[in-house]
Length: 155
Image 1: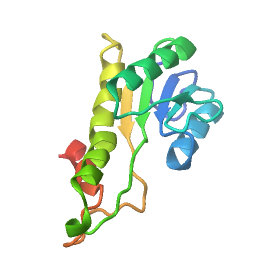
Image 2 (image 1 turned 90 degrees about the vertical axis):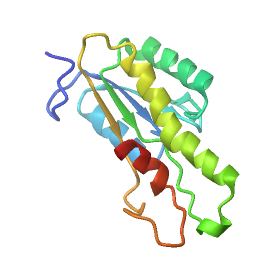
Image 3 (image 1 turned 120 degrees about the vertical axis):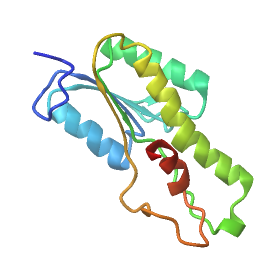
Image 4 (image 1 turned 180 degrees about the horizontal axis):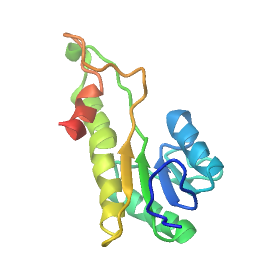
């Protein structure tokens, strides 16, 4: 078996899912586990069965990925599902709201990817970032939704 195979039929891979205690992240983690993959769930809730993490905090990310590697060994697949949806009219959004959103949705993805990619060496693998389906594909003229930080990853 090739553990770096990312096809839906492969199994036995080591998978980390951030934001995996609820919503889309939970469904993704459950699907990988049902497929026979080994899954570590990282989530800010610190719920039972998860590794507590604040994806916007470098030290927290390093500690959480160290715990995930202890549980899984090497990591084959990373799913970045942690995210914030901060809906606000542009004129009502504070800089603090914006910075928190960017810290989780953009910096968090960077920090998590860096923890995995930096340790893969020549192995191949996969990384994915998700956004809830109810997030708008583009912002309304007077809104400042979190779609802007997520678009930072998509260019």
